[in-house]
Length: 122
Length: 110
Image 1: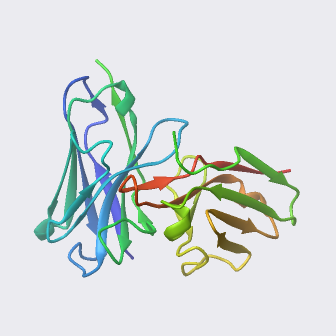
Image 2 (image 1 turned 30 degrees about the vertical axis):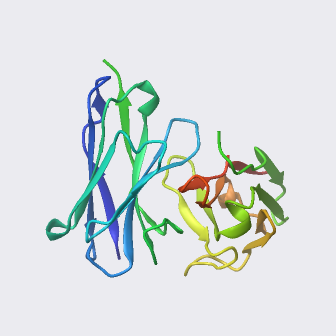
């Protein structure tokens, strides 16, 4: 049974870089046609896709965040990471990692991590 | 704001049926597969429907999805108290080059 777990600081200062890691267990991150994404949800608000990656390193980002986002993968450790630079209070959200299949362009996210709240505050 | 519009809330008595609409455009719902997610309070979303009308393993048959033109619909029959949650539609938007979610609908079981 595939499991995803987000980890990283729960508090980040304004203008700094938010860094999170998603560790995949119960399976390999390198399975063909498994794709991995980052999403977020501000408190009391809706869901937003941030970007996605394939174990080979192919990436796609949400254009609205692309200038500040870097997603990377470490297939040998079955984990992938998110960096979001120059954060502001508007980046305060629960951040989720999730899996989907078939192609890099996101499709139905069928496995999710539990989510981790990141607060941007001084 | 989201390019996919959902009603803020729907409600019905136990055992009854609810439907949730997801209205978009030709750049998203009209030409791409739609998914539906259920988010119970304080938990991660769960995939209920993919490819407009397909259920992942473990999702009961009382959950259904459909699509016509630029609108998609989620149906839940035999409503249970455990169905109280927020529901989101999601799909690719070819103009934005982004995966987008609907505004979300809160289902209340009366």
